[in-house]
Length: 302
Image (tube, rainbow, N blue to C red):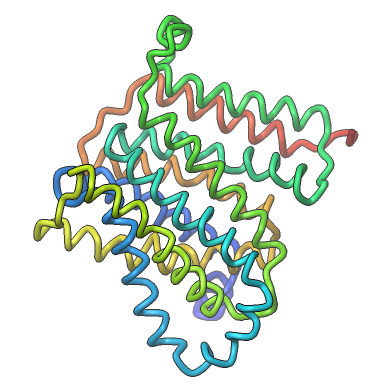
C-alpha cells in the first residue's frame, strides 16, 4: 500500500511542479556560485548546448519524425524558445552576478502575477477586482525586497540593478508559461529538444557580445561543476517537470508553484552560501504570499 501511494505521489503533476520549484530554487544558488567561475552568457550558451546534446541522443529516433511539426509551428517554437529559454536565462544569470540568491528567489515569486497578466492579454482570461488587488499586493512585496524596505532608496531609485533585471526575466518566462497552453501535439521531450536548439542558437549573439566586450570568463574547474549541475537539474529536469504540470493543470495553477521557489532558495542560500536572511526578506515574502492568497480567493469577475 505504501509503495503504491508513493508511486501515485511521484506521478502527480503537483509532485512534478514541486520538484521543478526545488530545482529552480537551487538554480539561484548555482548562479551566485558561478560568480568569478564562469561568465553569465557563457553559462546560457553552454547550458542549452549541453541540454540539446542530451535530448538529441535520447530522442534521436523520434526527432526526425517530428520535423514537420516543428516547421508547421516554427514561429511558436521560435518565440517560446527565445523568451522562455534564451531571454529568461540571460537575464537570470546576469542578475545573479549582481544580487543575492535570496533576492532572486523572492523576485521570481512574481511569476504567477506576470503569468496572470499575460493570460489576460493573450488568452483573454478574466479576473476579479479582488484578484487585481492581490496582484498589486504581490508587487508591493517585490518593492519591499528591491528597496530593502527603505522608502528613501525607492524614491531615489537607488535599487540594485540585479533585482530589476530579474523582474524582466520573470516577465519573459511568464510569456513562455502562458504560451505552453498552445503547444502542438508532441511529447515533452521533443518539445524540450526543439526549444533547446532555439535557445542555444538564440544565445550565440549574447555570447559574441560578451566576448567582444571583454567580459567572457572561461569556466574554472568549479565552473564546470556548476555548469553540469545547471544542465541536469534546472535546465533539463525542471523544464520537463514544469511542462508536465502545465499540461495537466494549466498555466495559472502551475505558475502558483513558483511560490515555493523563494522558500527553497532562501533555505539553500542560508545553508550553502551563508547568506544573511534579513527582516525585509521575511516581510517581502509574507507580503508576496499574502498577495497570492488574496488572488486565489476568487470574487465577481470583471
